[in-house]
Image (cartoon, rainbow, N blue to C red):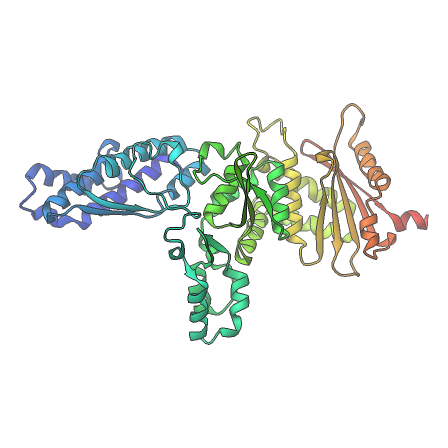
Length: 473
């Protein structure tokens, strides 16, 4: 959660590593001063001074190389996991400085190193973490080298299913766990998911459940409304096109949307379906899609958790009130949800101003998509920008009513109260004939509920117009 505890944890790992090589204390090739240094690192545990900690692997390489008469091999797994947590919790700059010194001493100015392998999902060389390391060979998701070694191939998976008497489940397994692409090799499966399925024989999001999704969740939750709009499309199974840069720049993640998509591809949450070159502009455009059913479930769970942290009971009660057409209850619960979640979605530097309410509204729509996916197809119309952001809930069962929601932010010049804004929203539904799509699907006017949502800061007012009530009058 903070730099100090992270540094202490790294120091503890270094101290434990030294403890594993206590045999060096009996080495005839080390002098007493060097042995005292080893004892001091072991004794300090999580409180190794920073200048000693950053040189500790370098020195251990020296001692081991002299003792065994061979250079060392260093394996560093998931080097970027602490850095992701540092970004999420706000101590990125401090950790980068520490890591840069540690990596430089360990991998650059280390004459006792034979070779090293580092793994991670983010390539952060532009952040100067590896600025001094000019001898790296980087293998990424688009590299052809080792492309079939990052997971199980489809041939291996299908052979395993046959051995476990699950040959009839091949298509289901492919739907759930296939989709990873490396280099020019497609149909790579996540080993953890496959092993768990073979063991438990149940289709579940095994990999998504064990992964740390804090990093990805922060980027999407706090991303701008355009990012959330793309997420809506992805959750519907659609694709979108973007440029990618495999060198993730953490400082760009708040500003550069492409950096986020690059990270999601590197993390395995999105897959590249096709690559097209724009010769005139000299760029490549990547066609991206959610990797598989397992990833879809992960995102759905993540979105549900957004609202659970800010009052899930209120959000669930709002959904129930919406389906029942209970406007009074909708107003009660929606104001509670907005009060608790507005700043949660807004990432402006001045939280009291809430300059980007679109982030909340689009997060709210994502929540609708997840909560009501079994009963409704959630459609949104964004042709005129946020000035007209319609939400249409198209029922999958003819017994349910169709629902139209129009969002409006109060215009202080033209609308004196939120009630005026509600009226404008409901009037727009009528004038723009938003019922046409639902009626074309065979839903009659008396089965369509219309709501105007008026927003001003954290205040919300919901008004309703039901055609059948008007006709009865």
